[in-house]
Image (cartoon, rainbow, N blue to C red; front, side):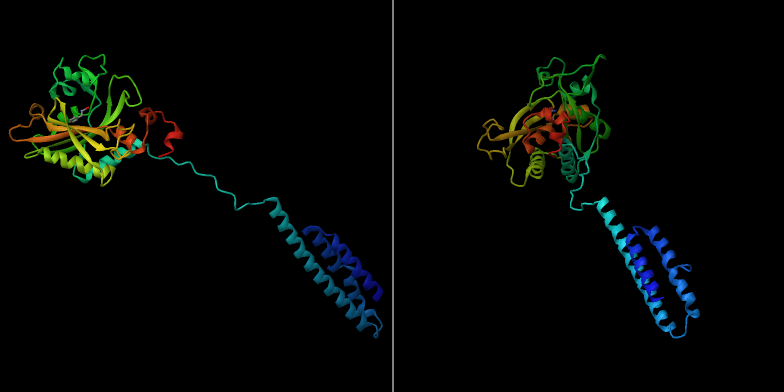
Length: 341
Ligand code: PHE
């Protein structure tokens, strides 16, 4: 009897070694610890044994039972561990791999410049006024004191449409008349941003379409000092606290007197370089006191009212700020260019 218990134990442990998964493990349990297993039959037969053999066989049978149960638990844990290891190997996850970058859009450099301009003038109390891009000859020229055949028209090469008298605006200045006619005789402080069109040879510095931001202030007692102060303050906010500015006498038919504002070339610091053409100064806008004829055309009595106006090219400012050497980059939509901003 003892020998057959040893035999049962050996065989069971051997077969346990061969189990490879949960299924075979359960089958092993039924075969070796189940109700009809050889071991359980030994327990059944204990009662039939001679009295003096019973304790020895019984103790041994219990020992084998505990040994098989412990071995079963061990094997079960080992199989679970092996399964975990296998799945870890199969689905290897490298948490140190860099992530995939998420493609992210950004604002066009022109839009960035425009928004800064809006913000600066907004802080000074200027409202944004949108005017039309398709204009009449009357608004674009006549009402701005530029009669037909006036030599000053040479400054603005024009795109005409097939409708006589209808053109693409060559500058944002016709917006001045629209604003004045809408608000007269109220005081005005507006900027007018938008696209302008000129029939010109495209080059690194000139394109046939571009943005302008016009400015207009009309009221009683507006002086050239207000113009200088406003534009100098604008330059400081746009280009930095220490930027130097200068006003140069100029001529526009719709302003009198007229001036262009230069800022000190921040590339060479005024010493003279290729960007500023050796002068040390960069021109950024045209301006002046609104001409009495224009005020009157807008519905304001020039005896009572005065005003200043200016017009700047945001592309020009963007190019200066970022040292972009060709204006055409701004419209080519080349991602290699745009992603730098
Ligand atoms: N409209 C002018 C231009 O296109 C700029 C300007 C605007 C000048 C307002 C004076 C006053 O060059």
